[in-house]
Length: 313
Image (cartoon, rainbow, N blue to C red; front, side, top):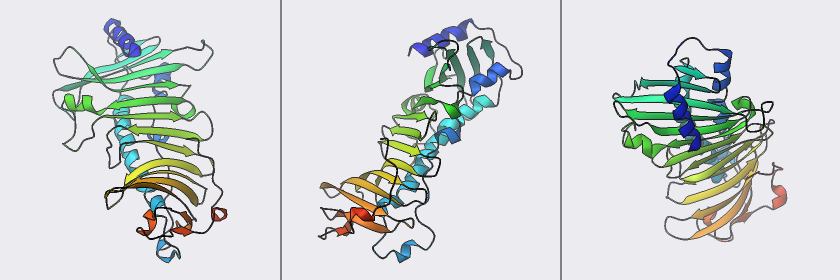
C-alpha cells in the first residue's frame, strides 16, 4: 500500500525522540477511532417478562440482533485495544506530517515487537480537513521486516466527526504467532464508518466470521432519536443461517426482511414486524419457515407495521 511504504520511509529517516504530548501529537491521535466511534448500538429486544405474554409469538429474528451486535462489538474492542496502546505513550519520533511509535516489545506476546506509524495529507488543500493513514505493524524480534496487522485511513478533523476505515489482518496475526489461542478469528475484518452526518453509519465485514458471528457484511445506521437500521446474519440453534435487513424506531418496534438457508436444505424468505415488546404484529412467510413448515404462515397486514427509518444499506 503506497501510504504504508511512505510511512516506512519516514520512519527510516526520522530521529528517535521522546517527551510529552504536543498539541500536534493530539491532532494525530484524534484521527484514531475510539470504541464509541465504532460500536454498533442495537437496543435490547423487548422488556423483561414481556415476551412470555406475546399473543402471536415473539419476533425471533429480532431477538438475535442484540447478541449479534455484541459479538461485533467484541471485534471492535479487539481493534481499539491495539489503538489504545498508542494513546498511553508519546511518539518516539516526530515529523511535520507524521508520527511514529516504537519499535517496542509486545508485553502480551514475548519475542514480538510493535511499531505504529501515522501520516497526514491534505488532498483537498491546506484549508480543508486532512486525511490520515495509519499502520500498526509487528515483527518477530530480530527480524528486519515488519508486517501490517492493522491499517486504516481517516478523513476529517477528529474521529467523532469524520469518516474512515480500518482493516484488521487476522491471518497476519496468526503468521506472527500473536493469535491468542486456537479459537482466534481468521481472514480479515474491515470497518468503514461515517460520523460526518446523520445517520451515523458503520459497516463491518468479516470474511470468515469471528467473535461469535457469521462471515457477513454487517451494516448499522443510528439516528439521534434512537431509531436505527441493522443488516446482520446469524445461525440459529438448529443450524439454519439467516440474513436480515431490519429497521426500528426509538422504542424498539420494527420490521425486517429475512432470507434463510436451512441446515436440512432449502432456501426462502419472509417478512415480519414487531412492537416495542418484540411481539409479532405482522408475518408473511410463504415457505412456513417461521411456523415449522405449517401453512398458511401469516399474521396481520403491512398496515400493522410501525413507521421506521429507511435503511441506507
